[in-house]
Image (cartoon, rainbow, N blue to C red):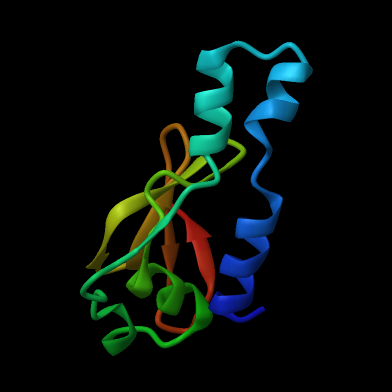
Amino acid sequence: MKASEFVSILEEIVPSEEALRNAGKSELVITDLVKGYSFTKRSIPLKLTDCIKNELTKLMSNYDMSNFEVGCISFLDIPTMDQYGLNFAKDESDPFYVSKDGIIEIR
């Protein structure tokens, strides 16, 4: 999937605050749920694709995904390179990396 397709899909599936209220969710839960789908276009893209070229690095280069969550996985504000590759996300305690070969690993 292309980074642009992923962004388009996310924009379409954000839950409606009204629907969540009608389902009996509290304002705090509504705020947290909607925030978990949010991302913003970076005014100045990061140069992540200089290191690793794939759709994930294109996405993170062009969008701040730090509010976006998938289950217990959250994206970092600014991904960092080290000996394992690009650290781009974390779960409760483990960092997620994409290697120069494009393989995603949990360390």
